[in-house]
Each structure stands twice: as structure tokens, then as C-alpha cells.
Image 1 (cartoon, rainbow, N blue to C red):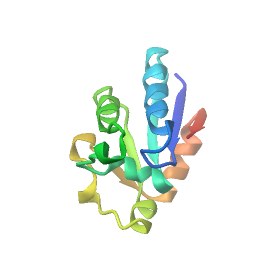
Image 2 (image 1 turned 90 degrees about the vertical axis):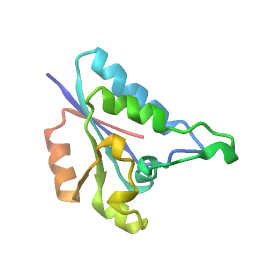
Image 3 (image 1 turned 135 degrees about the vertical axis):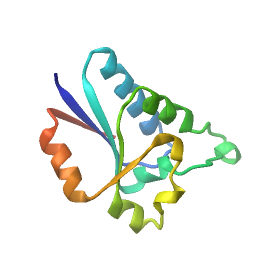
Image 4 (image 1 turned 45 degrees about the vertical axis):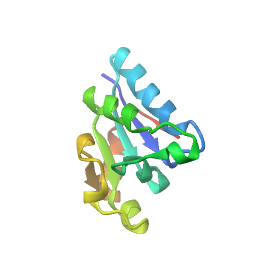
Length: 119
């Protein structure tokens, strides 16, 4: 079975990258392709709990991310990206069961993947 690593690099609002990444992940499952989701750089902002983007005219990405979790797609956040942005593990939405990993762990995920998609 192939394995794809989907890398989320951008924040949740102002573009469609995050939602498209979730759609890609779900589509790969339909094709029987295992995939993991890694949130790095500003992508870690997607994982913060209690988001309410109504004031900026956007829908929350949290529903899409929760669907990804329900389909058993592992969700990882890079520890250094969280620290650089002042985000603590307890700031992350507990429903997503985010696994905080080091950059070395991320490197290992890259080695194990047959393909990567960066958004």
C-alpha cells in the first residue's frame, strides 16, 4: 500500500489550502492510499481549539479537520512550529488528538512516505 504525507504549511483562513488538503486526504482514502497529515509553520494555526472566524467572513476549518480525524488519518504538529508561534499543546483542539512531534520525527515520516503533497 502506498503512503502519502500531506503537509499543511499555511494558516486556516484567507485561501483554500487547508480545506483542499483535507479533501485530498479523504480522496486518497477512497483510493485505498494511507496518508498522514503534518502541520508545520503557520499550518499549526489550523489546529487551535475554539476558532470562530465569523468576524472575518469565513467558515471554520475545524469541521473538515474533525472529519479527517474520524477517518483515522493521523494528525501531527511540529513542536518547533508551535513554540515559534507561542502555541502550547493544550491550545490544540483535543478532538483532533494531535500528536506533537519533533523535526527529526517529521524527517522519518518523510522517509517512510512514497509521496508528499505540500499545501
